[in-house]
View (cartoon, rainbow, N blue to C red):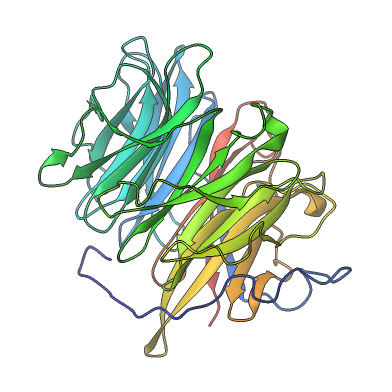
Length: 418
């Protein structure tokens, strides 16, 4: 959907990973690249202020990148609009929230007419989820933010998405020391506000339920999360589960679907709707090092490849993946594609980009002008958004070129060649 009107396209069923694992010994970076790379840019501009935790969304015309920056002993939120070609729209970052306490772990989504930015806020002495709307022009509607729920327990790690008619905000919630993390949600109708001021319990049980990822189809959504219910809170034995959601943000059925429960940890899920099914990818340590695995779940909640299929090659470490659905309007027809991005340490911490075609998932061939990342604390965690024409904007935190110990926010535009 764009701000200038709806664009609806009948998306073809593409079938994630139909070809199975990559051939052993094959070079996934050989051959001509179907993508072009834009200029790598620094999004944040204050080299004295540590900047971290970027998030990004597209409103039909421009991207909005948000991140946290620490100054004067507290952490505030900043934002910058970027055009689809990767050039900044704003001359300098804008302040989104500088309320008392710390504003961290932001997430952003575009709705009917406004962005909604949500974050973890400790102004009251306990972490709660706050939010603020941002206009397409970059103006903040609620400069002090507003509380998303009335809850008083510890609320952390929010995620906001748009269902097609309302915002859905998820977060992890703890009942106190020694208790596990559960997943809660609330939906915000642009016309009437919150539908459940206390929040709705989505996933609760033994152990921790965390790292939620959500995608929405035309009739329902799919929630995927990391779960250590069977591991005795051992972080090396985390599994992945899924559940269907109504467009109102409620669970459809009480049972959870086990997506991957192999040895080692399965974490950092990402999910996207491809027009016919929900495609999933995650970081998997069943082989020891972190590899990218994936599978698909039908609109009715049927898992296609229990345990998943391997996407990236080993034995080196990969970073958490991001899946994106692309609807491209090319040569008078619409096509749906799935693209994934992650970091690959075997390639010098470059950004690996993959595509899902009818024949399966293929990593991109050699990227002209390798996208290398200066390592901060471990592999940079990527965030990305896409236009309906096929441009991607990938954002991450890293160290400045030439050295230094203060992380900044970077972006790079990538476009599909046709």
